[in-house]
Image (tube, rainbow, N blue to C red; front, side, top):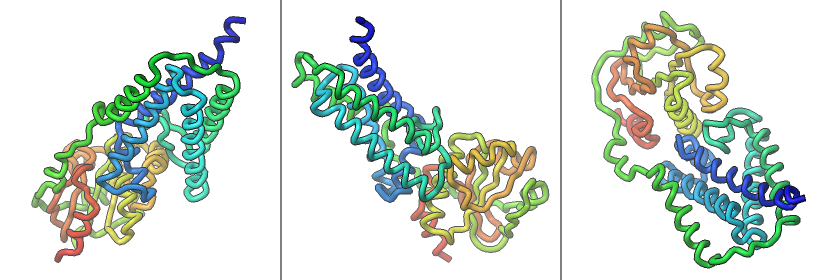
Length: 309
């Protein structure tokens, strides 16, 4: 009988740990979570890092409130249900517009779930919250007025401490200036898939070299997808390296199926990239004039470069 009486408390603590774990796993890496807000139009390239960390702060706060049984019925459970309903609606819209593809990002990149799987998970958690609202006893916790602001301040600060926003990033947002001829024969003579053959010796092109299993490559490809979606005329091209079985998961996770690509394996890929991925070349009439990493692949900078003669 004691186990039955303690069951709601076990469930409450479990729910709190789920929220804390969900927030923590989003932090590493946090960039895919940030990019979701840019794609949705909720934030831009500068505000999305703050929005992402603020939502993680809410998860931490609710998780802490659940674990210590603070304001459980008056605030915490209502906030939990509201948050889960909001994300469930968002996931439904995503399924309707884009299908049940890719990782929803609920647990970052460590525990990947499709939007439908995440909706089922949310419904289960909502059911747990309703159960606690009905069967859990009100808290008799002392020092509530002291603990609430302490948890609030800590939860807001923690994501910014664990994974700080690099406010000095503007100092190296400019791509690296280089100057060497691009040998496109290395790509298309040895390419596995030749359905997208492009002449890089004429005009401007931005060519990205990605490994299908590289987390930073996936984040950069997701960023390219968002920029291309907003500006379909940008001449992006991807050269992908990896096993065929990893191709579809790569596109599902990065949503970058809208970007032309080819597959290049083995030594030719290593010769072009020097073994470093992701590598992004800005090519002007066959000459690589700039080289980017994730942070220096900026939407406005790309547009300025393409529009200048």
